[in-house]
Image (cartoon, rainbow, N blue to C red; front, side):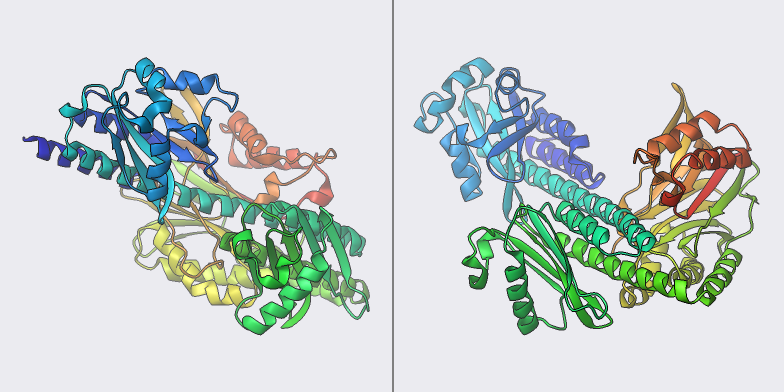
Length: 591
């Protein structure tokens, strides 16, 4: 095999590494090792920019000896290094988005800053390759050549340049996954918080505390320095308002943004954001506001208020989408408040909700189901009100077993309506599918218009058990990851069964979902649950949390499913009852 073929084979292998994982940090050292098998003798490292170009973060330095010791002793910390301290030619490479090869460090004035470093690290020549994602430099790959530069060719540089392109792609894939994961976490946090705030509104039948909680949460969601919420509620003459953070004139900014929004996109968008580089002229006279994000509160096609945050790091479409969902939750909370007020006047509604709750229980599957000769499925549902917690277990047309769990945002008749739709949609969508991701994708496309029109969504987790192969295919739409207990050579371990968390059903119509496959026989117990369990609060305000649930399961997994349920139920009885939401527990247990 000639040298060109060897380089091509190496690129193919690196390409396979990149496409088979969505985590650059799992393969970074393998990529460098493969590259240095071709470019030898040499050393290499990868630097990434974190948020801006102030610091370069050294993420791959296994082949270096002296340079990492500089970072460890640096005042900026072990991994970060000020970018301004790098040689000028590296700045040129990043700015111009092109590789630069310094063939002799000791003769080239562009490398004056690193002569001493080169002597101590033991290299004579250095090439820098910018890592580019979406036309933006996100870092750089450096190759340090140990021997005289005449031993290396332009073909070697082209090969390293190709590797740097694949490294940039891998980093981009990783960042996109983390962006989705972060958005899911923010969505879940938003849902949890608004539930707590609406309980405050519902329990006290008052707006003041509710507004204070919302303005604080808005600031946290968007990392803003200041936030303001204004709501014109009912027929009262003055709006309810609550501000949090720095004192800025956000009322004036909100008024101007409302006028701007109405003139430009009145029927398309309910929010807008500007950063320092595109701040409109009508806001530029307020020097204290560097960036701003704004969203209307719309109820029954009428504007009843707004949310506004200012001076966040840099607002994006993701922030606007999060605020859109947050605004929707506020509207639902207000409607819940109105229903609570009406409940005091009309006891008839209570009887209607009781009837709906009994109807919802009828939609649940039969309990204690045999999954195989060795496993049984049991579930346990607790409802204080008509809720959106739902599961179903049924055989598919391909003689597989579908296990589905969903959690619809909110409570009441609306959530019961969506539960009924979920039950129908999952059976309709599965048809002849063998992959769980395809079921969630079709469910999302089928239900999107309904969810969108009623401004709701649902988290979902689906497992398809393949009876012939004993495999399970798992796909997740914003739901909590299943917890699994399995035996290994080292002993019994408990883990969250990792699966890429896509967005809940009903958020975006074109959401993509992925699959995770594993063998059922590997697990002693698999637990699916809704957030009512882990969001219970103690009198000190501490959440029960996933880790406590895992402790209980690990301690008692050998017991019968009914006993495990009773233990979890007893644990929850020690938490504040007013913080207990509806909850659902499903156990797949080896018998």
